[in-house]
Image (cartoon, rainbow over all chains, first blue to last red; front, side, top):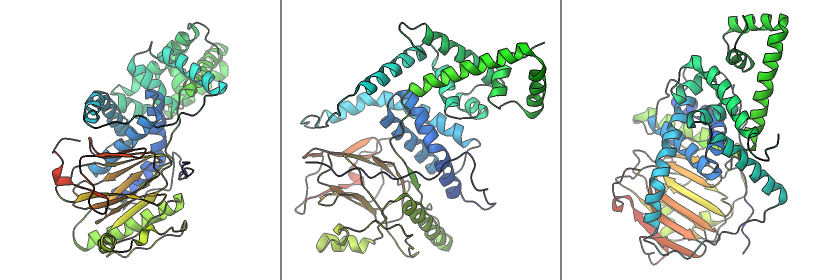
Length: 193
Length: 250
């Protein structure tokens, strides 16, 4: 039986700047604004880092839930969210096995999800992504995260805070990681620009 | 002496402090060696940006934050709750979501009699003004083929009632104001310190849905099969009291 077409909720306009905060802005005002400005950035960063858009969405949401539960803004909210997301990712990977055992107690009739047909363009995109991920794995986790955080628009200060590195070293580490990734990718067999 | 690649990277990223930025601009104007060096750094940066763009950065949820005021005491609480709910409705209405108002009394009516919210409602884009006496809040959305509902914490009180419905939307109705964070396939109920009960209506046509409390999976619908630790009652409701869930850390 065909399912109704998904109706997407359009995003609110996002941007790094918004209306100035009033002196009496509440935590909820700050939270809502931070959500509008940063949720997509965080979600994209996690999607590129993990290769799992659905997991990235979950982690990003969970990070914001934690911030909401905290009920007060940390000094650097964007960096705080990234740090929380990293911890959640680590915990997620640990608990995946526990969840599988939890579901194993229940009767499972099999996956009824329908897979969409692949196209040549999609196959090509997947191959390119695989190649980039192979090149990325030659870098340390820190350098992978450094590159992708910067790619998504996080500032040097936010990157330093999130990855617990000195602000003065971010530029140096970025320059080195950029050169390393570029070299690693070019050295892959059949890599193309 | 020429600036290092790292300094040029900071310069190109607009992350140098203003005096350094000006100094590097001046140097760049008069130094062909550094012009070539900066151009190389920029080419590498652009090349790597192109590589990183190959990584799937798809954001499946075009999300809006549905934020309600946290419970506070006395009159200030009522005012803040009302203001926050209005803000919620404005944000959600702008996003195209349908917000249903309701009171727990209506839930009781539903249990015993007609169910008004099963009637199809047109997409209402005008803000809904709620009375500060409204004790309940609700959210409904079109889930597509899959949905996940997550309650952030195990509550000491309250229950979750799940009903398979003939409608096309997922709806969650709480007996007390609570915050929701909504995505295209997942809604998180930020129920910290809440004692609310929740009515969840799920379309029968929904291919897959999971309902969790923290890390605990309490309800799973896969196709036409339902998996849960409770049996449905005579009206087909799956009722899960929070108190029946183990006190595991989410």
